[in-house]
Image (cartoon, rainbow over all chains, first blue to last red; front, side, top):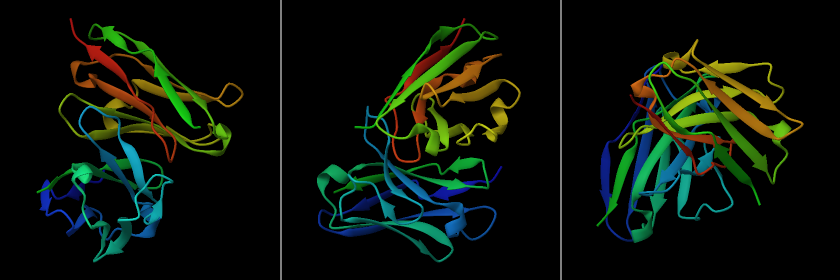
Length: 109
Length: 112
């Protein structure tokens, strides 16, 4: 099965902007991989932030956006808040099976 | 309000079996693919299996093929995961998820 790669960790300043990426060992990530992004805080279940590349859940703050960037899926956080400190996971679809990335630990500092 | 409530987790010996269930409400269950995900203690998320709206297609991560079976009952808005030949490495919190929402998870511990 494919390997999905994410940055292990990133740091952003409060109010700053950061982009998390999600790559695939099979080649460029496209809309056909239906990229998802999930946020997980310590001790909590994950929750969906972005689905199908760029669509937001009802609870997704406007400061989060999803896109395709340079052959990868991307999650951009513009105007980081302390409550955005969490683990972020992407999920790609491979015509049925799904594969998670290893997750990015985002620190807001 | 969407709710996904898992049940059936617990402690089981290696080689044993367990059946997880997920009760769904607040959305049209039969319209969506459904997934089981898991997370081992201190580790990242792993996709385990998914099932098409009508149950006609099912997919599994390689590590559980032949041991786990996903199923659904659209009349009862329920999703299940039958887990056989359990191994220590199957120890994890198991989550039921629609394309948009997750349950709170149920812990499966495989240990003698």
